[in-house]
Amino acid sequence: MFRLQAFGGLTLADSSGAPVACQRRRLALLTLIASAYDRGVTRDKLVAHLWAESPADPARHALEQLVYAVRRQLAEDVFLGTDPLRLNPVRIVSDLAEFRRALDRDDPAEAMVLYRGPFLDGFYLTEAPEFERWTEEERVRLAEEHARALHRLARQADAQGQKTVEIDCWRKLATLDPLGERTALGLVRALAGAGDWAGALQQARAYDARVRQELAVPPMTDLTAEVERLRGTVAVTRPSSERQRYVLEQEIGRGALATVHRARDCKLNRAVALKLLRPQVSSATDLRRFLREISIISGLHHPHILQLYDSGTLELEDGRTATYYVMPLVRGESLRDRLRREGELPVDDAVAIAREVADALSYAHARGIVHRDVKPENILLEPGHALVSDFGIAFALDAAGGEKLSLSGFSLGTPGYMSPEQAGGSPRIDGRSDLYSLGCVLYEMLAGAPPFSGATAQAIVARHLSDPVPPLRTVRPAVPVALERVVLRALAKLAADRFPTAEQLGDALRGALA
Image 1 (spheres, helix red, strand yellow):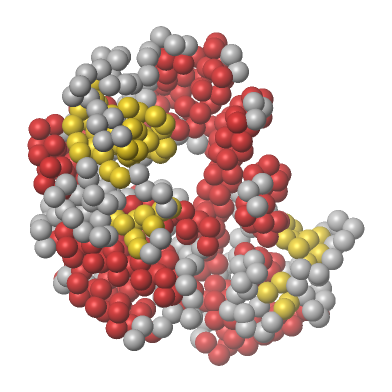
Image 2 (image 1 turned 90 degrees about the horizontal axis):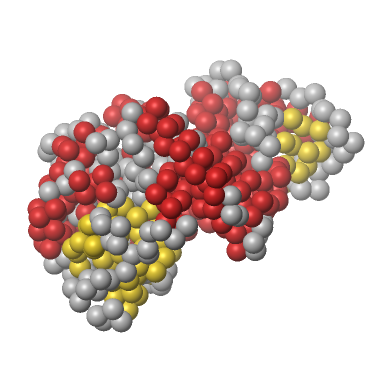
């Protein structure tokens, strides 16, 4: 039995724990196959990662020799299957597979033990640029998985009253993301929950100073005030008049522009999702114009668009006024949730979701409304159909204060799904920008990752502007050629080279599987 360990470096050991001397390319091959877990990796994909710049026939021959050499060194039956190739779990185990299984069975504590450091830390493979690019993307993805597991472990510890474990999780997260507001808030609340008010206040002040020093702006949330609120000096938000009809029950999410709350509509006695714009966003926005634009958007009625119920302002008991908008509380999951769970989706499912989103875009574009932030987080999945959420919110914010928001450091749109013209700051954004974003989402549903990624937002934007789209069928040969052509046209750098309308994109998707 051999053990492949890819977290914190890359090593191969035998059953006694002794390191096995192995050539770097052999280790890279084993890691590529291990990363696919039970699905295996096709030979075409292995060639694309390890010999991307070599002619096809020599590259395939080199792969055959490499597979033969690994079998000779380790065991004849180290691999299962011929195409795709899988690792034989009787012969070789990997921390990657164990990490995935721990996450699948919702055991974040075990996942933490297995994650000993960044994926392939310090390992490189010369003359294999595609392998290096893949390594960087996997490193980012697995680090995000690690962070999410830490978050789950912190929540579990909180529910079980294990304050020491909870605080330790938040401290580890703060080390990974020292400027993260959610992390800082979690640590402050955990310390306060343990009765360590001095520690909570010290952490709040340290975070405030760090953000001001690194970003030259004040934090979006006053954590010092949050400590005081937790002590009971700031009351929970609640309706203070007949006109104020919503009671905030629980925060269920937060983004760069708003926080999301489960709320109770007292007038209609129903649960809703209420989004509160962050104070800095509200202050940079013309409130009257924003609410006027929202009222226009609330007129969108389509089976694949999550309707906007209401908008206005809430008076908070600490004296502040918060701008909000209200949507239905969806009981299903987001497309992001499904992608995290499944990776690549079945081709038919991916196309069906994309067609429903295209149908929603076609309806809105015909009424002059561009979404500007199509991404998996904004596509909600209910039994039988997809719903596009936050339709037109970025449009309304841009109309009501786009320049001020930009100067305040807020970006309307998400780098991984942003069209080249939107990323470049073009004032001429039309529906074809949404089609590019939908192309990115469809690519991710089919390939398991968006077409472009990077360590920073700037790096991702640069790739959208200049890099060619990685061939989809190299990553997933089962994708029909006609479907790949549709995706590549949607992802054309120039808007004029894309589908003219969302309706035409939807028709092309239908035809691609005919």
